[in-house]
Image (cartoon, rainbow, N blue to C red; front, side):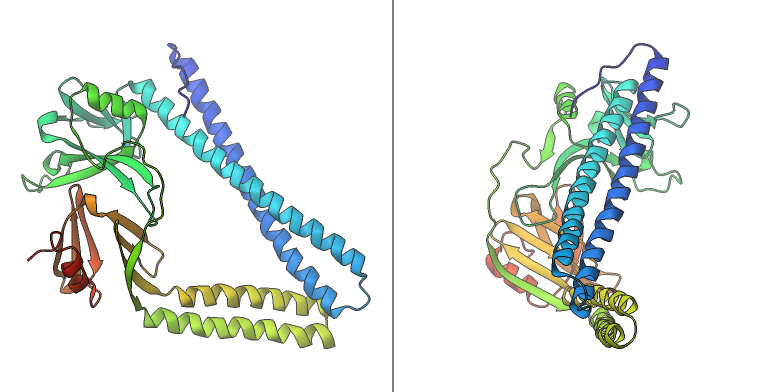
Length: 353
């Protein structure tokens, strides 16, 4: 990410920020336009195939031309939508970095409208508009963690820096316990690592040195189906395919356009619900490098053994859970039958006796 020079004049800074906002709005509009065009082109491809199958008068050459145009247009617009999504992400990161450095080279966003400034002997939390309450926390009460959030069992992930702060300074009610901690997160960047080193703060957590991406080895997998969701998606899958089947006689004996539309909608609905039916389960996988969790809602998480301190079996609001304790916080996962017993055998140093 490039760093835009900070003008000395406040008016020039405002102009640059407004330019970033206009750029982000433009990228966002083009992203949604090309995304909609891509979906429309792929739907038109399916409709063309169905119409050609049931309309003998339609010439084969014309069908090929339409298929090529719609399919090529769908692929091209999908690639353009992806391009503008990446441009939007990059431009937004540049805008946030510019806003941070307008406040200070030692300032970083830790939430919506909240900046953390690394001063000489303490961390200052304040609003980016300068009008909100400020909180100053001595470095002796601050711990800094390097965290890599992985959504899949692989080395690549999204790096961030988490700051552990005393809750008593941040909770408005003032009812927090003296030893209670709160984690705030900010994007990882070279400038942040330089500031942490300059202020003499130890960077705990996972090592940030580059590593070669490699294939992780899965040892076993446990899963639990979600009955309610499976029943719901099974009914919707049958209903969707029934609509698709009903579109065939409708196209033959009544109206080809209406029949094609019913078949496309029903097929899309059936395939989508079938995919949801198959994925309506929670999965706990154990790898040589760590553990992978995926729930029925699509939440994914991979934790490496080196960041896991202890795995404890307990209850959370009378529900059996496995508490995975890491140096920067705890994760609570459902206690699937057989998981803890397997972990106790293969990773006895990580499981509570």
